[in-house]
Amino acid sequence: MQNKAKFWAAGLAASAAFFVGLEKYEGYSAQPYRDSGGVVTQGIGSTTKPDGKPIKMTDPPITRKTAQEWAKAHVSKDEVAFRKSLEGVKLSQAEYNSYLDFVYNFGQSNWNKSSMLKNLRAGKYVEACKSLLKWKYVAKRDCSIRSNNCYGVWTRQVERYNKCMGVN
Image (cartoon, rainbow, N blue to C red; front, side, top):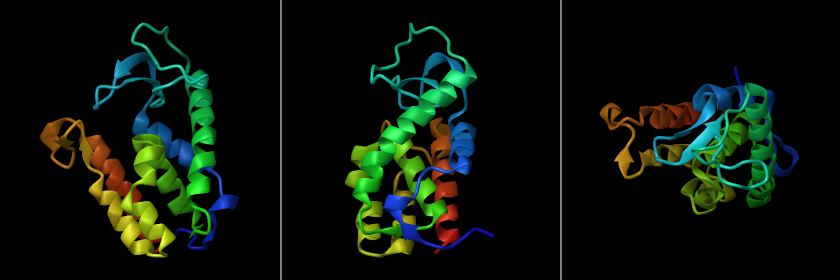
């Protein structure tokens, strides 16, 4: 049973469960690789190093511990803009984690123009959850179609949606 209590987003932070889920979905790779969208990625879904420099295919391998540190640095940076975007919005921890995971995956600029954020600001929590399911495309491929080789993007969205609906 998820806790349905809602708090001002400004007072929330990524929980330990958030980071467990992040590693579950992103996986860990010591070596740089191209993700389903063709972006050079390393560690636990990092596309940039903590100093802001992009990951390159020629970068040396990193340890799991380094990957976790990079992910935490990335998330703490993302959270500043994320919380600011949610001024005056109350969320449960599960919602906060789900939407922050979306930001990690799709970026702050996509979040800022999303119907999720518009709905949350309007107090339409169920509609905000449903808006998660609109984000199923990577590199113009519909990831809800298994043969498009990005099905993990879709299953992650469905899990975010289910967690979100579970508290609304």
